[in-house]
Image 1 (cartoon, rainbow, N blue to C red):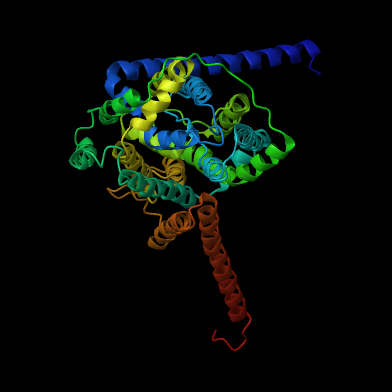
Image 2: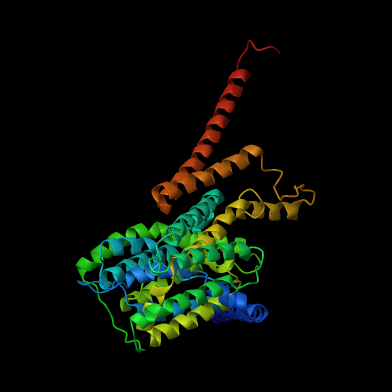
Length: 472
């Protein structure tokens, strides 16, 4: 019997209502979790909110530096307003401390090539369009399903070690007051290192919040030297020309693999590792988030942004466990951008390098730690295998360390080596895409080796079966 048009319409309406109720319930549970977590550990959530400042501030400062012959490459007030709004929205929707970070590859090209605001905007818009296309077509989900876990872990560890190296370079930079107060600069470095070591034992101490307050204290002389008055944000649209857009595409091409691998796929994997009790965002949702943020904000001179696994690791390392932390951060950034853009610029420049550097180092350590679970059930593919085995058989034997007994020594070695090759490619060439390609080639070499061995053993077996002189 044919289904009447009314029946089809009612079925569609019911599906839409069910989908709406499901999303609404997920949203409500996220807000309940955010509120509950913030009430239980307010200082830790606030401390974690500022955990990513070590990577954010150096790029913001470089972007907004004053030059004699050109304007800053971005508008600081617009960046603070929009990233603050995005922090709030992401915290509400995802319910995890999902960071809003600069697109580092674009920043590197823009700063070295002296881009103007239109060229920086073009780069962000181009990456947003590509990521949006990959999300709509389902290619992001395909990449997430088919990239081997050792390669993903290698990207996370490689980015973590890159952050440690970068943080170390920032940490040893001379302070603004070093010539006048060398002992104070040395004492500050010692204090930050001891604080970082102690934070592993006293985890409830809001270490990042203490560092931020200390940094603001050191920034006071910078405010006195550069007196500024509050100024309300005055938004302005920057429309790139064809020539400027072509420059933006050149800068955006290097950012695409970094965004797809580190800002989307690695973020989803890290979220599952660090926050297993929270729903893991899908690559589709993160991809749409990255595309939407830049399509809305880059026109106003805002810095191109994405989500990064390093930022998530940093905020988690300093205490953030829910979206409440970045909602708090978003409110602070929004108010600063709306009313105190020039004032904030001088504050950022006065924060000591040792404080920024140690925060980046801590983030790198937290991110690199996820490689430890490569050959345990903490890895996504092994966890899925465990769930399948537990539903079909209850006699699966495991070691105390959580290693799957069906994962042979050779398999563990191969997974570890693939991860290390990925890490090596990232560190050697300072490029996530090169590390990804190196890891994939190494993974495929094992696959081809196994196929060759299988083909050869089958061929030798066929020859032996066809040998009439063989003993019977």
